[in-house]
Length: 634
Image (tube, rainbow, N blue to C red; front, side):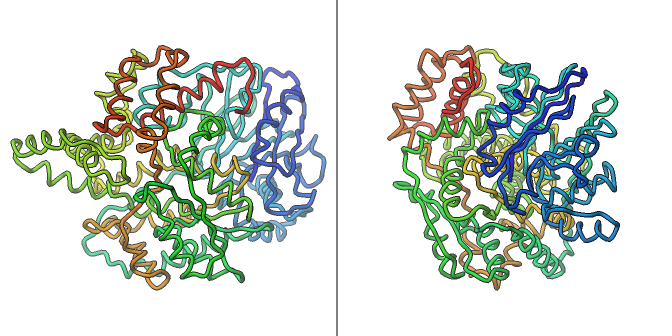
């Protein structure tokens, strides 16, 4: 896995090598094995490389066209793995192409030479790339279909600057470091900024499945792939009609992701998704799979290591475990630096730590990311169907329930009943899309009104509702699958996995996010995914025989972090010192409202743990990226 960056001077000026090198230096964690810059007049490309395939110098990046004449050929900066490249290479060789390495990057260049912009349709894997076609003075930027690998850019009348991470863009003297204040309501509601927006004015994220092309002075951005819509319910659908196809395609997705010239292993939480990936890996590997899990001290409701250990014992893996302590908060500035933006998902802590410890043993790790988005694994999907029945209750009954749950204190355990009940009751009174958003958002409208000091005029609820077509005849669960696949998955989960693993120089691969598997699963009727209150029904049936029933059928457990308890106990003073410091009064928030939020959390009246985490990341983001005259890692 790698990091890339580049500059295209649209005004005809030559690219300064020193600026390109400074950008590239900020990506060394993404590629500690090799790096270089190639400047060809108005275009410069740079790479940092984590060598996975072809460890020889012939696999160096950026890669030039195979004739070696980069000044008159094609040069590509590349971040990713194309798992079907052996088949592509054989086809290309039959068509007369000659190869000088065993790198997948060389096959991608050859595909472009043969197929032009249609080359992207042939790629099966994860990637972000920048390809400079010197003879045609054309630059192509592209991301993989589901957004597993990132790519950001800044565009003005004079130049296009692009990189795998925003910090590399900011090393260019003409890229401004200006907070996008108008997006603050979206950040507080979602807990992340939905692409293509970022926390910086003028900096955009290229959406998944998109390509940006600059040719003859014209810049175009378009989708080369669109996710298929999830199928609606079919009362006649039978699980047995789909099981073999799902098993075979998932097995293939795992098998092709074992392609590596370096050691590989897997994250193992003990949940269905990661356990199933490890079980399939074990079928294709001649030695025990190396597995890695992480747990927490003092908060058993967040700790899954016992389940991971059980699966590891059953499958005979070479298993390793690590424990997270509350002092992991010391990582907060480090994580903000690697995410480049405020980010509410505190599970970035264990994701980074398990990546860091995993990297001591292997260079590549397979993950269970995507199983919930494909197979309806979130309990809130069932809550959406339950809300329909709740809304049929008499108003006086619903009013009494709402009053009762409003009086309950909020615990900090993983399955805090009171806050779940409050969220359900409050959200269930709203239209379906807004009800769902109310369950997943961090700051609701009332909290936004209390906390914000007037910044931003974006309505987060309207923004979320815009992802739904009011005339869509499909089941609401099918619509939710589509929205999660195009918002929460790429903008939160995949960002977290990419930044946390790359901070440790570890490549993470997600078999569930194989686009051919996704296209198959999208055709499966949604009532075979969510069957009554049973989430991931079809996947659970597909796992039988590979895993024991108690692992398959145990209740869904997300990769949570006990920040609620931390900020109520060990880190109570830390949160107050940072958020109530005079430096934190930046005109975003009402200080008295922030103080009230901290008091409510400390008293046990409310659990604001994730909200406090988000506010802390916002403050640290300012200190690291906006305040200082020179960017530097913490």
